[in-house]
Image (cartoon, rainbow, N blue to C red; front, top):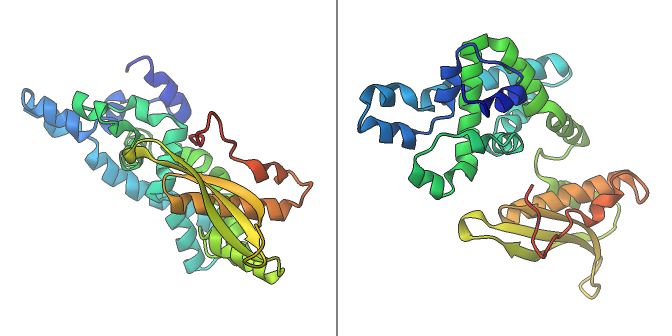
Amino acid sequence: MEPAWAELEASLGHEFARPELLVCALTHRSLAKQFGHEHKEAAAAGDNERLEFLGDAVLNLVVAEVLFGSHPEWQEGELTRVRARLVSRQHLARVAAAMELGKYLRLSPGEDRSGLRRKSTVLSNAMEAVMGAMFLDGGLEPVRAFVRRQVMGEAAEQLAQELRSGAALGNYKSALQERLQASRAGMPVYRLRRQSGPDHSKRFLVEVLVKKDADEPGKPLARGTGRSKKDAEQDAARRALSQLAAGPSGPAATELLLPAVQNGEPPTP
């Protein structure tokens, strides 16, 4: 086991008895293919795609189990909707990025130079592969602990609150519009404030305002960021809902100006 990977094991909360499983989970097919030109046996056993398949199934099982036990009042449709969000590639990529999983990936030099270790699809696939490796190494218990802490955690509670609010899961724009209309405050309008970064890794900063009529400039509510304009709008709407729920003096009031703009660039989450 490489010394740096001890930090990853600490983040996972699991020390591998069979470290070769973790090595395999972190090996992208580009590197296995390169090895294959000289070492066919290493290539045959080396990449993480089979572990990704297993990890996906284990993740779905564990999330379903936890949701089933913690929300006896939910019906099948509610359980399915929340699980889908928690096991989505977008959410897993965020979990992987927060753990800095990308720096541990084993890629071919060419793919490494292309920025592959930062791509959300690669990160989410590797996250599933790592959970597959954890299952083979230690059974369901270490996966349960990791999923509860890192994959679910605050995200599960936020989704539960959103579900209780009656809004469609993940559609913060619709929820904000419904809330503003119900209070007759006006309509939300989204304005692109800034975009930055290369074409393959754009970042967008969007502001949401409330307008009662076309002649008014609109009252700013919040700002949001994302890798697309649509994602940034959803993030701005989410922050605005948090701001409205907390009130002008509540703990979420600081989100009015978040995320802050540093050096003229939207921050990287």
